Amino acid sequence: MGIVAGLDSSPDFTRIVVCDTDSGAVLRQGYAAHPLERTESGGRPSDVDPQAWLLSLGEAAGGGLLEGVQAIGASAQQNGLVPLDAQGNTVRPALVGGDKRAQVAAADLVDGLGGRHAWAEAVGSVPQAAQPVTKLRWLARSEPENAARTAVLLQAHDWLVWQLLGRPVRRTTDRGGASGTGYWSAATGAYRTDLVELALGHQAMLPEVLGPAEAAGTTPEGLLISAGTGETMAAAFGLGIGLGDAVVSLGASGSVMAVHPEALVDSSGMITSLADATGMHLPVVTTLNAVRTLRGAAELLGVPDLETLSDLAMKSTPGSHGLVLLPYLEGERTPYLPHTAGTLTGLRRESMRPEHFARAAFEGMLCGLADALDVLRGRGVDVRRIFLLGAVAELPAVQAAAPALFGAQVVVPQPGDYAAIGAARQAAWALGVSQGTLDPHTPPAWRGAPAQVLEPGEELAVGQAVRQQYVSVREQTHPGAFRT
Image (cartoon, helix red, strand yellow):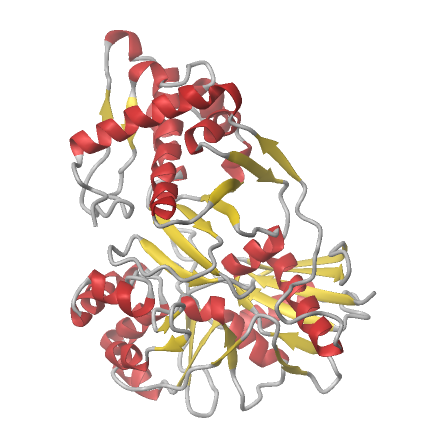
């Protein structure tokens, strides 16, 4: 038996779990908030001094939390770009989060390479405002002096691994993190340095991409540091998802990802082709409108919270008494309709009740995510079990409708630090390979996350009828929206 640690540096805090290498059982935990100043509106800043991540890490690891630990894995927020100069100093604060400043830069890059199809073919994704490649274009246009000084490009977990190892000459990343940059292709396993130059205006040093079970290095004290990865890949690894599994994440926007044995090149740009933390692939389809749909419905109905909205929806019946809501409230990404608006149909005198509208909001949100699932299924991705993540996954209205609308078993994991657990599992894998006790192609078999399992059951036929009505309305209002 050994002991490893996994740390997850999210936008707001650092969580650390210390785990048994054989079973994955969590032995100890640590937590610390990041010492960040909020924006005037109370939101997260788009520029962050990376030293804040180290301060939070040090606080979370206090009190002997890491005593006896043999290896550490690092997970961190994705899309956080840390530009360094030739001496390894930060050129400016890290650019993090869904940085809306870069929206124009994203459009410039799309046009610069010849459109969405060209980007999808090149690196498996179309530039979005949050991506590192887009942040590079923004930097070149808005801060040309800083752009000229930028010599090395790291992401958040790359920078943390580099710091843990004492800032060695060698800088590394992993397949998962690299696949989200916009200048590394999961299909070819290679960087597109021409896209770095297109965005930044010149070449920059890029970190070496490690395999899933490779170690980034060892500290002078003999502590092994694994490759690290982005928080999405780490959470998938911590949950233990595999072939046949998909994850539906319910945030303000929604995402659907699934494990697949090969990279998907999707010329439509609806699928973002990411790599996972195990050597497989994570094709992702994103919707703009998920929980924001529910919040908008709650505001319109004057109910105080989403729990009350759920209770109200449960007073209606499947199909919402004929109401169908296409929840394209802020445009939509899947299907690609950036300038459209939402649609409510089926209004009759008897359907104009709060409970029916509340139910239509839940069904519309889930049907939009079912559309995203169908994009993956249409490309041959096997989906037999769906992990449902997010705080609203616990709501009765979500759990009552999701299995039948998705047409599959739905698993709702208990809340847990799955990104940190995934980072710890990666550390255990790298440690086992270094000791000769684990195969570099087979991760440690940790027990899965405790969860509630929901079956479609007798409601499947009703749910599929509701879904068909949604699809019919979508095709009437946006004909051919999913044609590629």
